[in-house]
Image 1 (tube, rainbow, N blue to C red):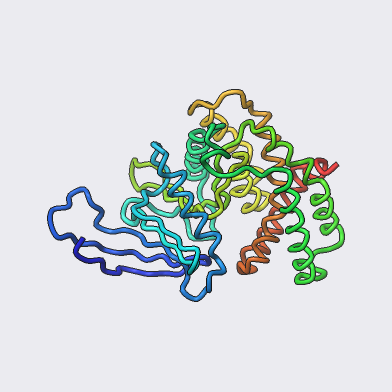
Image 2 (cartoon, one colour; image 1 turned 45 degrees about the horizontal axis):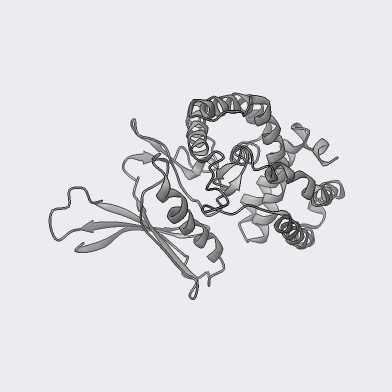
Length: 323
């Protein structure tokens, strides 16, 4: 490569995104003309290190093993524990793909259908893969769950101090009951059945939709983990949509997702099992806005997520799962 010129640069909440135009010393017909450099924000002092390290791990441990083209190609992935810096050099989709809408405007049903089918295809590729928890990712065992719920209890105490009476006593009780029920509820995952790799931050604006007949690409993998596939669906739908849209589109999209799972080889996972997992995922996701607030995401993100997920919690009867 002869040179790399900055075409554009922008900050996100968690990273710096720089588009580079490349030139080469000689013929390079198959080499990319532009790439995306994703790196740590220069003024964060390593506070977002875990997310960057996690995404580097995704591209080195997961994406590198996949034959299904559903994530950007990664040309380089590096992180340094000493300086808590990291970067990714990724395929550029600026000219070939689009983001469906400007946040927070939701996509059309057709676009959402394409997104959940792409998620099903990705989930199916890792469904109950024997490498999960062995050479790819780690599973949450009983001790890990105890530690997680303890950390959440501490975070929640600080969160309630922050929001005051904006979170009434009834809602606080729900969280306290979830902490108590957590070790029982996580038994679903301990079965090690019908699990896959989930994106975690699976909202619709983390998807590149093709301008023509190419595949969707799913990006931003700093929250990936081994879990039930319905976690990504509950994050996309229950967390981000208001009741009217959710009531109209939730079940049809779950139907499309399940059909796509079956079409891509998943067996022994019926439609009722998906409903049960989705409901449990919505319950777990009431924790997400608390984590987001405590990690200093803007209130416009976590406050609206909190209100929407608690509405979904009631609509889906998640209270019954708490016992």
